[in-house]
Length: 421
Image 1: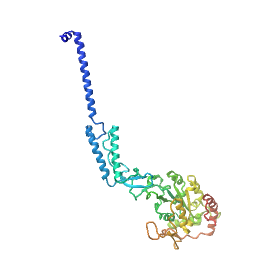
Image 2: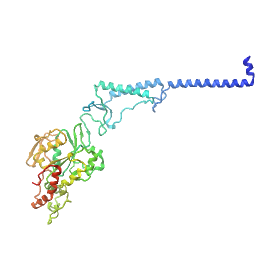
Image 3: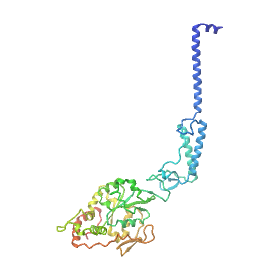
Image 4: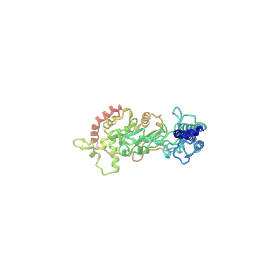
């Protein structure tokens, strides 16, 4: 009766209706909030694009992640023809093992990471499980050392024994007809030296091709081995010192020098063998023979001004990084000169007297056993050519011309080469 009396009053009826509406709205909001809270707690957290995981709920996502971990573990344990390299804690021992990287793909991971959940806790759990799986693999292979995956200087892994291509750590930069080919052939006997046979001419003719092009020309080396190349024209190329320094300021430089007059005659002899119609040595030597003016624009003469060229190199490299090898002693005492070179390169003296014999026909020392051969080896027929007879007056004029340059060169290098005796 009380409710009917209140409801019959227009004002009371209006207030009552508003109260009911508000109460219904509040209850509806609370119900929706409850539903949303309950629904969100059971929905999967956002995942990155993958048609396989869209619409999965929490339990299904956990199952998927578990299956993914098992699949990753199976892939790690069964994947073949892949390599893993790692270092021991003292970084002195490297061992090759199965890797997560394919050397044909420049270090790209072979497997897809799978569903990557945005939730930090899920990411940590997945990472922990993957790490445990990897730890199990390492333990099963008895790899108890700390390890890191390596890609090397070329971005590619190589199995133990294959090596990788490196930029050269040492260069034979000159001089032409000084004995550079003999030195390179002798050095290649050393097991810790790997050298390019042909002359790359990178720092004088092919520099625009870039360092990666240059690296590809190099032989593969193992840890502890030295990569070398020789191009005798580098020593007289104005741009070469700066370019080599830009590659590495630690590059060791070797220059084989020889009596400038003998070297010039040898240079001329080589050109004459290719072009018999060239003018005589005497006519090329002088600008004016009557006045005795030497033509320093002729490359055969210019190369022998060693002090001038050395000044250019000392702007970029200290003298301690340059070794000068006597071309004459390379003939008379190859083991002695090779001993100095091995010391300079920080290598054990393995090349000794037992590796050489003197060839009377050639007039210089040859290897008893060349690299990769059990037979004696002498340089080819282009080496040891018979020089033409040069008029003594011309030789005397050249001695007078070279003497001051030779004396300066002796002072700069701290070594007497005996060309003016």
